[in-house]
Length: 189
Image (cartoon, rainbow, N blue to C red; front, side, top):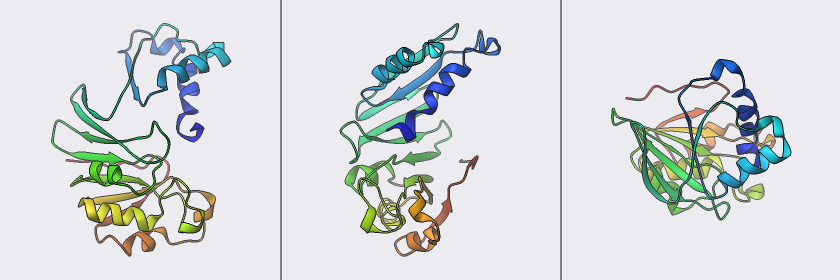
Protein backbone atom coordinates (compact mmCIF):
# COMPACT_ATOMS: atom_id res chain seq x y z
CA UNK A 1 0.00 0.00 0.00
CA UNK A 2 1.08 3.60 -0.58
CA UNK A 3 1.80 4.33 3.09
CA UNK A 4 4.68 1.85 2.83
CA UNK A 5 5.92 2.58 -0.69
CA UNK A 6 5.25 6.21 -1.69
CA UNK A 7 8.65 7.30 -0.40
CA UNK A 8 10.23 5.16 -3.10
CA UNK A 9 9.38 7.85 -5.69
CA UNK A 10 11.09 10.52 -3.59
CA UNK A 11 14.14 8.26 -3.15
CA UNK A 12 14.40 7.61 -6.90
CA UNK A 13 14.19 11.35 -7.57
CA UNK A 14 16.81 12.14 -4.90
CA UNK A 15 19.22 9.57 -6.33
CA UNK A 16 19.44 11.62 -9.54
CA UNK A 17 21.53 14.12 -7.58
CA UNK A 18 25.10 14.12 -8.98
CA UNK A 19 26.42 13.64 -5.44
CA UNK A 20 25.29 10.01 -5.69
CA UNK A 21 27.26 9.28 -8.90
CA UNK A 22 29.67 6.38 -8.52
CA UNK A 23 28.12 4.97 -5.37
CA UNK A 24 27.47 1.28 -4.84
CA UNK A 25 24.25 -0.13 -6.34
CA UNK A 26 21.21 0.22 -4.09
CA UNK A 27 19.66 -3.16 -3.26
CA UNK A 28 15.86 -3.09 -3.22
CA UNK A 29 14.03 -6.19 -2.06
CA UNK A 30 10.29 -6.59 -1.82
CA UNK A 31 7.32 -8.81 -2.44
CA UNK A 32 5.88 -9.60 -5.85
CA UNK A 33 4.92 -6.38 -7.62
CA UNK A 34 8.06 -4.39 -6.73
CA UNK A 35 9.30 -4.29 -10.35
CA UNK A 36 5.91 -3.16 -11.64
CA UNK A 37 5.77 -0.48 -8.94
CA UNK A 38 9.16 0.86 -10.05
CA UNK A 39 8.05 0.88 -13.70
CA UNK A 40 4.77 2.60 -12.81
CA UNK A 41 6.58 5.29 -10.79
CA UNK A 42 8.91 5.99 -13.69
CA UNK A 43 5.98 6.14 -16.12
CA UNK A 44 3.96 8.51 -13.93
CA UNK A 45 6.92 10.72 -13.05
CA UNK A 46 9.59 10.56 -15.77
CA UNK A 47 11.93 12.65 -13.58
CA UNK A 48 12.15 9.58 -11.32
CA UNK A 49 13.69 7.46 -14.08
CA UNK A 50 16.91 5.88 -13.01
CA UNK A 51 19.84 8.08 -13.85
CA UNK A 52 23.51 7.34 -13.38
CA UNK A 53 22.93 5.06 -10.44
CA UNK A 54 22.29 1.36 -10.35
CA UNK A 55 19.45 -0.43 -8.60
CA UNK A 56 19.75 -4.10 -7.70
CA UNK A 57 16.07 -5.09 -7.68
CA UNK A 58 14.65 -8.47 -6.70
CA UNK A 59 11.20 -9.69 -5.77
CA UNK A 60 11.33 -12.19 -2.94
CA UNK A 61 9.10 -15.09 -2.00
CA UNK A 62 8.75 -16.71 1.41
CA UNK A 63 12.10 -18.28 2.25
CA UNK A 64 15.64 -17.12 2.93
CA UNK A 65 18.31 -15.14 1.11
CA UNK A 66 21.44 -13.14 1.83
CA UNK A 67 22.02 -9.45 1.27
CA UNK A 68 25.65 -8.61 1.92
CA UNK A 69 26.41 -9.72 5.48
CA UNK A 70 22.72 -10.02 6.39
CA UNK A 71 20.68 -13.20 6.42
CA UNK A 72 17.03 -12.48 5.65
CA UNK A 73 14.05 -14.76 6.10
CA UNK A 74 10.59 -13.91 4.84
CA UNK A 75 7.25 -15.43 5.72
CA UNK A 76 3.74 -14.88 4.42
CA UNK A 77 1.66 -12.77 6.71
CA UNK A 78 -2.03 -11.99 6.49
CA UNK A 79 -2.76 -8.56 5.02
CA UNK A 80 -2.65 -8.67 1.20
CA UNK A 81 -1.85 -11.58 -1.11
CA UNK A 82 1.76 -10.37 -1.46
CA UNK A 83 2.42 -9.36 2.17
CA UNK A 84 5.59 -10.63 3.79
CA UNK A 85 7.12 -10.33 7.22
CA UNK A 86 10.91 -10.06 7.45
CA UNK A 87 13.47 -11.46 9.90
CA UNK A 88 16.99 -10.09 9.58
CA UNK A 89 20.09 -11.58 11.20
CA UNK A 90 23.30 -9.58 11.24
CA UNK A 91 26.82 -10.97 11.06
CA UNK A 92 27.05 -10.46 14.85
CA UNK A 93 24.03 -12.75 15.36
CA UNK A 94 21.66 -9.93 16.32
CA UNK A 95 18.14 -10.39 15.01
CA UNK A 96 15.25 -8.09 14.16
CA UNK A 97 11.81 -8.89 12.77
CA UNK A 98 9.34 -6.64 11.00
CA UNK A 99 5.70 -7.59 10.73
CA UNK A 100 4.65 -5.00 8.18
CA UNK A 101 0.89 -4.52 8.07
CA UNK A 102 -0.54 -7.74 9.44
CA UNK A 103 -3.41 -9.55 11.02
CA UNK A 104 -2.34 -11.72 13.97
CA UNK A 105 -1.20 -14.97 12.33
CA UNK A 106 1.39 -17.77 12.48
CA UNK A 107 3.66 -15.94 10.01
CA UNK A 108 4.01 -12.97 12.35
CA UNK A 109 4.91 -15.22 15.27
CA UNK A 110 7.36 -17.30 13.22
CA UNK A 111 9.45 -14.34 12.03
CA UNK A 112 9.64 -12.96 15.58
CA UNK A 113 10.74 -16.21 17.24
CA UNK A 114 13.49 -15.37 19.78
CA UNK A 115 14.49 -12.09 18.07
CA UNK A 116 16.29 -9.27 19.82
CA UNK A 117 13.88 -6.70 18.37
CA UNK A 118 10.36 -7.17 17.00
CA UNK A 119 8.92 -4.14 15.18
CA UNK A 120 5.20 -4.84 15.00
CA UNK A 121 2.12 -3.28 13.45
CA UNK A 122 -0.11 -1.75 16.14
CA UNK A 123 -2.34 0.41 13.96
CA UNK A 124 -5.52 0.48 16.02
CA UNK A 125 -5.96 0.52 19.80
CA UNK A 126 -8.97 -1.82 19.86
CA UNK A 127 -10.42 -4.65 17.82
CA UNK A 128 -13.44 -2.62 16.67
CA UNK A 129 -11.56 -0.93 13.78
CA UNK A 130 -8.95 -3.62 13.30
CA UNK A 131 -9.19 -4.72 9.67
CA UNK A 132 -5.93 -6.17 8.37
CA UNK A 133 -3.92 -4.71 11.23
CA UNK A 134 -2.93 -5.66 14.74
CA UNK A 135 -3.67 -3.94 18.02
CA UNK A 136 -0.99 -3.34 20.67
CA UNK A 137 -2.57 -6.19 22.65
CA UNK A 138 -2.16 -8.56 19.70
CA UNK A 139 1.39 -7.31 19.11
CA UNK A 140 2.13 -8.08 22.76
CA UNK A 141 0.63 -11.54 22.40
CA UNK A 142 2.71 -12.25 19.26
CA UNK A 143 5.91 -11.03 20.98
CA UNK A 144 5.15 -13.13 24.05
CA UNK A 145 4.45 -16.32 22.10
CA UNK A 146 7.54 -15.73 19.95
CA UNK A 147 9.82 -14.97 22.89
CA UNK A 148 10.98 -11.64 21.44
CA UNK A 149 13.29 -9.68 23.74
CA UNK A 150 12.08 -6.17 22.80
CA UNK A 151 8.79 -5.15 21.20
CA UNK A 152 8.59 -1.92 19.23
CA UNK A 153 5.01 -0.88 18.53
CA UNK A 154 4.61 1.00 15.24
CA UNK A 155 2.29 2.13 12.43
CA UNK A 156 -0.15 4.07 14.60
CA UNK A 157 -3.36 5.34 13.02
CA UNK A 158 -5.04 8.49 14.40
CA UNK A 159 -7.40 6.29 16.42
CA UNK A 160 -4.45 5.52 18.72
CA UNK A 161 -4.39 9.10 20.05
CA UNK A 162 -5.22 9.19 23.74
CA UNK A 163 -4.58 5.48 24.35
CA UNK A 164 -1.72 4.09 26.43
CA UNK A 165 -0.45 1.69 23.77
CA UNK A 166 2.35 0.35 25.95
CA UNK A 167 -0.16 -0.54 28.69
CA UNK A 168 -2.32 -2.36 26.13
CA UNK A 169 0.68 -4.40 24.93
CA UNK A 170 1.76 -5.02 28.53
CA UNK A 171 -1.44 -7.02 29.15
CA UNK A 172 0.13 -9.76 27.01
CA UNK A 173 3.89 -9.14 27.09
CA UNK A 174 6.37 -8.74 29.96
CA UNK A 175 9.46 -7.71 27.99
CA UNK A 176 10.74 -4.28 27.01
CA UNK A 177 8.21 -2.24 24.99
CA UNK A 178 9.07 0.84 22.95
CA UNK A 179 6.65 3.03 20.99
CA UNK A 180 8.10 3.97 17.61
CA UNK A 181 8.78 7.60 16.75
CA UNK A 182 10.52 9.34 13.88
CA UNK A 183 14.27 8.71 13.72
CA UNK A 184 14.21 6.08 16.46
CA UNK A 185 17.34 3.91 16.42
CA UNK A 186 18.19 0.60 18.02
CA UNK A 187 21.68 -0.80 18.45
CA UNK A 188 21.63 -4.60 18.45
CA UNK A 189 24.35 -7.04 19.35
